[in-house]
Length: 182
Ligand SMILES: [Zn+2]
Image 1 (cartoon, rainbow, N blue to C red):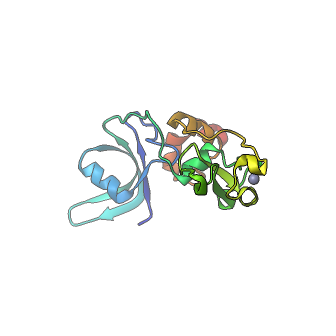
Image 2: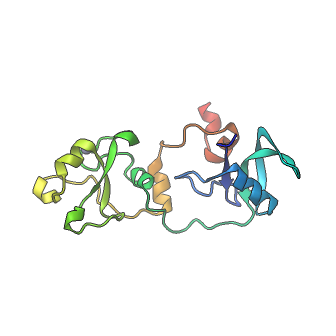
Image 3: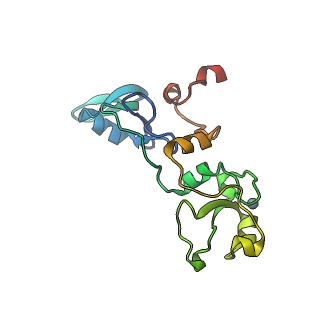
Protein backbone atom coordinates (compact mmCIF):
# COMPACT_ATOMS: atom_id res chain seq x y z
CA UNK A 1 0.00 0.00 0.00
CA UNK A 2 2.95 2.26 0.64
CA UNK A 3 3.58 2.54 -3.07
CA UNK A 4 0.07 3.67 -4.01
CA UNK A 5 -0.07 6.88 -5.98
CA UNK A 6 -3.02 9.21 -6.34
CA UNK A 7 -3.74 10.70 -9.77
CA UNK A 8 -4.05 14.48 -9.49
CA UNK A 9 -6.48 16.26 -11.78
CA UNK A 10 -6.83 19.96 -12.37
CA UNK A 11 -10.09 21.65 -11.40
CA UNK A 12 -11.43 20.81 -14.88
CA UNK A 13 -10.84 17.08 -14.22
CA UNK A 14 -8.03 16.77 -16.72
CA UNK A 15 -4.65 15.54 -15.47
CA UNK A 16 -2.56 18.37 -14.08
CA UNK A 17 0.22 17.14 -16.31
CA UNK A 18 0.43 14.15 -18.58
CA UNK A 19 4.16 13.84 -19.19
CA UNK A 20 5.08 12.97 -16.59
CA UNK A 21 1.69 12.05 -15.26
CA UNK A 22 0.69 14.16 -12.26
CA UNK A 23 0.43 11.93 -9.24
CA UNK A 24 1.19 12.21 -5.54
CA UNK A 25 1.95 9.68 -2.88
CA UNK A 26 -1.43 8.81 -1.34
CA UNK A 27 -0.41 10.31 2.02
CA UNK A 28 0.00 13.72 0.37
CA UNK A 29 -3.39 13.30 -1.28
CA UNK A 30 -4.97 12.53 2.10
CA UNK A 31 -3.33 15.63 3.58
CA UNK A 32 -4.65 17.78 0.72
CA UNK A 33 -8.12 16.29 1.22
CA UNK A 34 -8.09 17.05 4.94
CA UNK A 35 -6.99 20.61 4.12
CA UNK A 36 -9.86 20.84 1.63
CA UNK A 37 -7.51 21.71 -1.24
CA UNK A 38 -8.69 18.84 -3.42
CA UNK A 39 -11.93 17.01 -4.05
CA UNK A 40 -12.15 13.24 -3.82
CA UNK A 41 -12.88 11.62 -7.20
CA UNK A 42 -12.19 7.90 -6.74
CA UNK A 43 -10.81 5.46 -4.17
CA UNK A 44 -8.64 2.38 -4.00
CA UNK A 45 -10.07 -0.56 -2.09
CA UNK A 46 -7.44 -0.27 0.63
CA UNK A 47 -8.54 1.40 3.85
CA UNK A 48 -6.46 3.63 6.13
CA UNK A 49 -6.99 3.36 9.86
CA UNK A 50 -5.62 5.94 12.20
CA UNK A 51 -6.76 6.94 15.70
CA UNK A 52 -8.74 9.81 14.24
CA UNK A 53 -10.02 8.55 10.93
CA UNK A 54 -10.87 5.56 8.79
CA UNK A 55 -11.08 6.16 5.07
CA UNK A 56 -10.35 4.52 1.75
CA UNK A 57 -7.08 5.45 0.07
CA UNK A 58 -7.82 8.09 -2.60
CA UNK A 59 -6.90 6.95 -6.11
CA UNK A 60 -7.97 10.13 -7.94
CA UNK A 61 -8.34 13.68 -6.59
CA UNK A 62 -9.02 17.01 -8.30
CA UNK A 63 -7.67 20.42 -7.34
CA UNK A 64 -10.34 22.80 -6.11
CA UNK A 65 -8.60 25.77 -7.65
CA UNK A 66 -7.72 25.67 -11.37
CA UNK A 67 -4.00 25.74 -12.09
CA UNK A 68 -3.12 27.31 -15.47
CA UNK A 69 -1.05 25.07 -17.74
CA UNK A 70 0.73 27.72 -19.76
CA UNK A 71 4.45 27.87 -20.05
CA UNK A 72 7.17 25.35 -20.49
CA UNK A 73 7.76 21.84 -19.18
CA UNK A 74 10.63 20.98 -16.85
CA UNK A 75 14.00 20.24 -18.44
CA UNK A 76 14.36 16.59 -17.47
CA UNK A 77 15.81 13.47 -19.05
CA UNK A 78 12.37 12.01 -19.47
CA UNK A 79 11.04 15.12 -21.20
CA UNK A 80 13.98 15.08 -23.64
CA UNK A 81 12.97 11.55 -24.64
CA UNK A 82 9.38 12.66 -25.03
CA UNK A 83 10.33 15.67 -27.16
CA UNK A 84 12.51 13.46 -29.38
CA UNK A 85 9.88 10.70 -29.40
CA UNK A 86 12.39 8.10 -28.19
CA UNK A 87 14.26 8.51 -31.50
CA UNK A 88 17.99 8.80 -31.87
CA UNK A 89 18.33 12.26 -33.40
CA UNK A 90 21.23 11.05 -35.58
CA UNK A 91 20.10 7.73 -37.08
CA UNK A 92 16.34 8.41 -36.60
CA UNK A 93 15.69 4.97 -35.13
CA UNK A 94 13.38 4.47 -32.17
CA UNK A 95 14.67 2.76 -29.00
CA UNK A 96 13.40 1.90 -25.51
CA UNK A 97 14.61 4.35 -22.83
CA UNK A 98 17.09 1.77 -21.53
CA UNK A 99 19.01 1.89 -24.82
CA UNK A 100 19.09 5.64 -25.19
CA UNK A 101 21.63 8.20 -24.08
CA UNK A 102 21.95 11.97 -24.35
CA UNK A 103 24.35 13.82 -26.56
CA UNK A 104 25.51 17.41 -26.28
CA UNK A 105 25.37 18.70 -29.88
CA UNK A 106 28.07 21.25 -29.12
CA UNK A 107 30.30 19.17 -26.82
CA UNK A 108 30.68 20.32 -23.23
CA UNK A 109 34.43 20.41 -23.80
CA UNK A 110 33.75 23.16 -26.36
CA UNK A 111 31.46 25.16 -24.13
CA UNK A 112 28.21 23.40 -25.07
CA UNK A 113 25.61 23.75 -22.36
CA UNK A 114 23.10 21.29 -20.90
CA UNK A 115 20.00 23.00 -22.24
CA UNK A 116 16.95 22.14 -24.35
CA UNK A 117 18.65 23.48 -27.47
CA UNK A 118 21.91 21.60 -27.05
CA UNK A 119 20.93 18.17 -25.71
CA UNK A 120 19.43 15.47 -27.92
CA UNK A 121 18.43 11.83 -27.59
CA UNK A 122 21.02 9.50 -29.15
CA UNK A 123 21.57 5.76 -29.34
CA UNK A 124 24.84 4.47 -27.91
CA UNK A 125 26.52 3.74 -31.27
CA UNK A 126 25.71 7.21 -32.66
CA UNK A 127 26.75 8.82 -29.40
CA UNK A 128 30.15 7.16 -29.41
CA UNK A 129 30.60 7.81 -33.11
CA UNK A 130 30.00 11.51 -32.57
CA UNK A 131 32.00 11.67 -29.35
CA UNK A 132 33.23 15.10 -28.34
CA UNK A 133 33.40 16.35 -31.91
CA UNK A 134 31.30 18.85 -33.80
CA UNK A 135 28.62 17.67 -36.22
CA UNK A 136 30.59 19.00 -39.15
CA UNK A 137 33.76 17.20 -38.08
CA UNK A 138 32.03 13.80 -38.06
CA UNK A 139 29.70 14.48 -40.99
CA UNK A 140 26.53 13.73 -39.01
CA UNK A 141 23.25 15.59 -39.18
CA UNK A 142 20.35 16.04 -36.78
CA UNK A 143 16.86 14.78 -37.45
CA UNK A 144 15.49 18.03 -35.99
CA UNK A 145 17.15 21.05 -34.48
CA UNK A 146 16.63 20.74 -30.72
CA UNK A 147 14.50 23.40 -29.06
CA UNK A 148 12.57 24.00 -25.87
CA UNK A 149 9.05 22.61 -26.39
CA UNK A 150 5.86 24.04 -24.96
CA UNK A 151 3.71 21.83 -22.74
CA UNK A 152 1.33 21.41 -25.64
CA UNK A 153 4.07 20.29 -28.05
CA UNK A 154 5.40 17.84 -25.51
CA UNK A 155 1.98 16.30 -24.95
CA UNK A 156 1.62 15.99 -28.73
CA UNK A 157 5.08 14.41 -29.13
CA UNK A 158 4.27 11.75 -26.60
CA UNK A 159 1.77 10.30 -29.05
CA UNK A 160 1.19 6.64 -28.30
CA UNK A 161 3.78 6.57 -25.54
CA UNK A 162 1.24 6.82 -22.77
CA UNK A 163 1.46 5.30 -19.36
CA UNK A 164 0.82 1.60 -19.72
CA UNK A 165 0.04 0.39 -16.22
CA UNK A 166 -2.45 2.53 -14.37
CA UNK A 167 -5.21 1.75 -11.91
CA UNK A 168 -8.59 1.29 -13.58
CA UNK A 169 -9.97 4.31 -11.72
CA UNK A 170 -7.46 6.54 -13.57
CA UNK A 171 -8.36 5.48 -17.08
CA UNK A 172 -11.44 7.67 -17.48
CA UNK A 173 -9.35 10.73 -16.79
CA UNK A 174 -6.46 9.85 -19.06
CA UNK A 175 -7.82 8.66 -22.34
CA UNK A 176 -10.72 9.78 -24.45
CA UNK A 177 -10.88 6.51 -26.30
CA UNK A 178 -10.47 4.09 -23.41
CA UNK A 179 -13.85 2.54 -24.16
CA UNK A 180 -13.07 2.05 -27.83
CA UNK A 181 -9.77 0.35 -27.02
CA UNK A 182 -11.29 -2.34 -24.86
ZN1 LIG B 1 21.53 6.45 -33.54
